[in-house]
Every structure is written in C-alpha cells, then in structure tokens.
Length: 531
Image 1 (tube, one colour):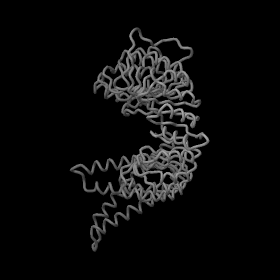
Image 2: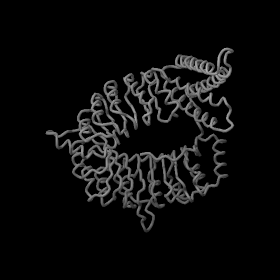
Image 3: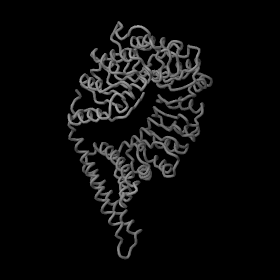
Image 4: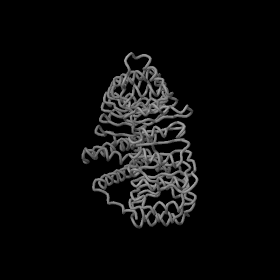
C-alpha cells in the first residue's frame, strides 16, 4: 500500500505560518484601506481619499517588508520569497475570478489592487532567484519598475513579452544586476539590451534570448565580454552564420548554444576561414538538416560532445556514422529516421554502453529485436523515451523473457512511451527495468488489466513512484487496486479521469480512501512529458 504522508519539518511549518500571517495582513490592510477610500475628509473628495488609501497600503507594505526581513534568518529569505510568490499568484487569480462575477461586491476591485501592491514585499537586495514567467501580468508590471533594487539577484527569468514599454524600460535595470549568472529574456530582447548585458553582467553563465527576432550579429558581439558564458540560446533570432562562428571562437567556456539549424553551415564557415582547425568546448548539439560532411566537421571541431539532438529525415543511410567517433557521448535524441536503414542499431552497438539517455521520436522499424538490442547495448540508460514511434508488431509468442549476458535496463529510472505499442512491448519494458521510478504511457498504448497482472506477477514495479497512463480504454479499478497493493513507493497515479474502465463513483471512493488513510498519493496531477 502507499506510504503515509510525512509530517512537515519545523522549517516548512514556520515558513507556511509566515505566509498565513502575510495573508492575514493583506485582508486587514484591504479592509482598512477600503474604508479610507470610501470616507473622504469633509473638505476632500473621492480622488483624495483614494490617494490616502494608496499611501496607507504602501506604508503597510514597507513596514511588513522590514518586519519580515529582520525577523526571518537571511538564509531562509529565498525560500520565503518563493512561497510568497506562489501564494500571491494564486490569490491574484482568485481575486480576478471573483471580480469578473456579475454579483461581485464593490470591494473586490479594491482587494485586487491591494494584492498587486504586495508584490513589493520581494524587493530586497538579498533575494537571489526570481522567476516572473508564471506570474500574472499585473504582478510582473509591479516588479519591472523596481528591478534595479534587486541588486543581489543571481538568477532572473523575465519570461516572454510583447515589447510593452514597462518591460522594455526594465531592461535598463540590468546594468544594476551585476551578480547575475542566469538570465532568461525571451521574445523581445534587442541589440541595445545585449550591450547593457555585455558591459555589466560579466558573471553571466547562462543566457536565453530565443525568439527575439531583433537580435543580430551587431548585438551578440557585446556578449564576447561575458567570458563565463556556458549556455547561450539564440534560436529563432536573426543571428548570422559568421556571428555564431565569432561566438564559438570568442567564448572559451561556451558548451551549449541551444537549437541551431545552421550548425552545419557554422562548421563549414570555421573550416573555410580558419588556417588552424578549431577545438571547441561545445558539449551539446541540437540541429536539423546537417549533412554527412557537416557532421564530420562537427565531430572534428567538437570532440567533447556529450549530448546530440539530431533530426535525420531523408538520408542515404550513413548520416549517423560520424557520431561513433564521439568518445564522450552520453545523451542521444534522434528524430525522423529508421532504426535499421539509418544505422541507429550500429550506432547503439558502438556507443550504447555509455548512454544514459536515449530519446527516439518518429523512428520507424522498431520491433522486439530492436528493443532487445537497446537492452543489451545500453545497460547504463537512466531515461528511455519513445515518442510517436512505429513499433512493428511481431508475430509468434511473447518475447518477454529472453536471455541476456547481464541484467538489462538495470539503471533505467524513467520510461516514456507515447507510441502505439502492443502488450508484448509494454511487458518487456516494465518487467526488465527493475529500478523504474517513473512511467508514462500515451493513449495509444494497449494497456489493460491483464498486462498489469502479468507485470506484477513477475515481481516488477517494486520501486515505481510515478505512473501516468493517458486515456486507457480497458484499465479498471481492479488494476488500480493491484498497483496499490504491489507498489509500496507509489506517489503519483495520474490521468485516471480518462480511464474509461473506471466510473466516477469508483474514482470518488478511491480518492476518499486516499484522504481517510492519509496516503502520500496524488491522483490529480496532470500529464507531463519532458525529455
């Protein structure tokens, strides 16, 4: 059966208590400021009353910020800020939902305005990490104006924008954020912003400015001043081939430039204009449309590569051959190819023993022989992904117990299969991966109660923690009960609302049992595929 929920630590209880205290303060300030805004002095008017109410809220926020940051130990500031932002984001969404009701009380608008002002609580030089990407726009606007006061920031995610003036003006504040090591600024970064970053953020290690069409070689030249850069995402910018080559040669620690479909052309540019062959520190390749000759140049210039994400598509069958010369290859993602005709099988025989991640997407010619080859040649895999692959259905008996020289999939912890897969494929994968912690299957997997029974009968899934199966047509509550009895570490059992073999009353009773028994089991979490 699932384990019981653990008691929260004193630290967690304390920080959550502080958040409840902040919530109480917002309610008290809202009530008082609303009274002030609706009761102007005898000689005043409503505009003057609104101003007095706003001043009252600002003073209350200033007092509360001082109180919090002088009462909480400095090494817990970040944890408190993270919890507060999560709570405030939910509170703002709820306040907006109440306001939109036709019968909402008049003070609901005032309450929303007060909540927005409370975002000023995070303005403190000791805050090191700030993520604006998931915040409502009204909260982001409140922070844009005071970014320069967050001088201690090391990690800043500004998310994406549409070039609104308040956001563009906030980019000027980056000159004050000299401690930044990670910066995300998507969609509307400009060359002028890169000039500010290059001249003031010398500690920067990671910069994501993808989808910013205004970025050109003129702006990225400033990034040569950021000599500590290791990750630079310029995907869907207007960067030129010469500009990429300049960055690759001028940044001595650059390991990853994100997705770059011109990577092959960059390699040709380096080969054409360098008299001495370059050896670059690049460890990641993510590209499309690379030719065999370009991939040979890449292997020559980037011998330390550990991660390859390659779109193969139409090929004569030998495109992947140069990858066999990458001695440090650990993670391999291949899209749009044939397992045998494109020699994926040969590559796995050569490099499979060192792989920890194998991601196959839109790969054809997969069959039980291919799965056995992966099992034999890739004993150190930690994550295995099949996405929209074409599994060839084998005829004959079930091949779930072949003989291997060493136990297959012994280190596999995560399995994602969003592909049409027959029962023998599912059983083969689940039975042999004895240390699986996370499993995700798409709606086209032929999952049923018999498969669950067969897998559990082989003493599998003892270490499983998360199971996500999207839209099963045959799984019933019998399979759920069997999993609960056989999987003591199970914490997530997701997407059961889409299992047609389970009725709403059955699911309601199960969730009631989870609550009454205090099990550490989440059945509400949504579908998520990463990797």
